[in-house]
Amino acid sequence: MHGTLLLSRTEISRMRRNRRFLITTLAFPVVLYLLIGTRAKATVYGVDFAAYYMVAMATLGSFSGALMNNSIRISQERKEGWIRQLRLTPLPPSAYVVAKLLAAMAISVPSVVIVLLLGRFVGSVHMSAGSWISVAVVVWLGALIFAALAVAIGYRLQPDQVQPIATLIYFVFIILGGVFFPLGGTLQQIGKFTPTYEAVKISTDLVGGVSVPAGLVVGMVVWLVIFVGLAALSVRAMAESV
Image 1 (cartoon, rainbow, N blue to C red):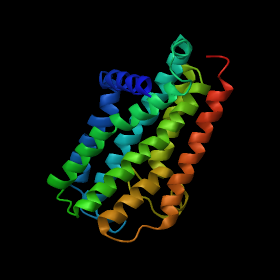
Image 2: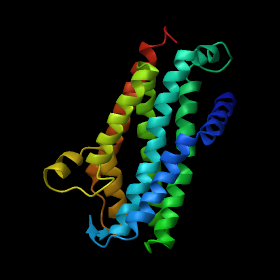
Image 3: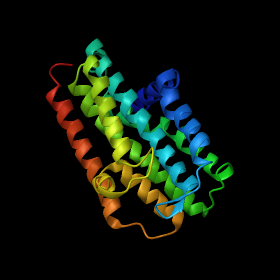
């Protein structure tokens, strides 16, 4: 366990030095919130637009780094033989994957916290301390869902294939999840089944002080199970080639 945690710390340090990671997980959500979230006046999902856009941008920051950066790096490291070298060490076989998941979870914390702080002090979003913590936890745990998907993609695909496919998945979940803009009509009916929509809707329900439908929570758990299963299958299928 100590070796896995040490590897996780190394992964976190490497990700913090990645400019692309800092842009997608920190700068992009913050700039969008300041430009859009604090200016638009409307009610979305039962809360003020500033509150909706706060949780939307926190969700964007948490899963962007977990999916995009992780999937590309895993694929590249597999190609370069880094995973094979780790297997020659005393680390358990699962150490690499666990370290990636832990690093994705840890590195998503700043983006979630910064956007929520902006929502409170710039967007004038008010709720109880318990609700703030609950929203942060929901958005933060969403990063684990996409970190698992990143493992599945990174293990399966070559580096030149990962980026376009991960980008396509990224934008599908952003749009259908109502992250850039709130959904309505048919698009909302489709988007209800995405983990991004579920994370945003659970969070806005918490902000609004209304009961969270159990189906939304179950939906996020189901997505996590699906992506963890895909990750496990990918790791097992590629075990002989890394």
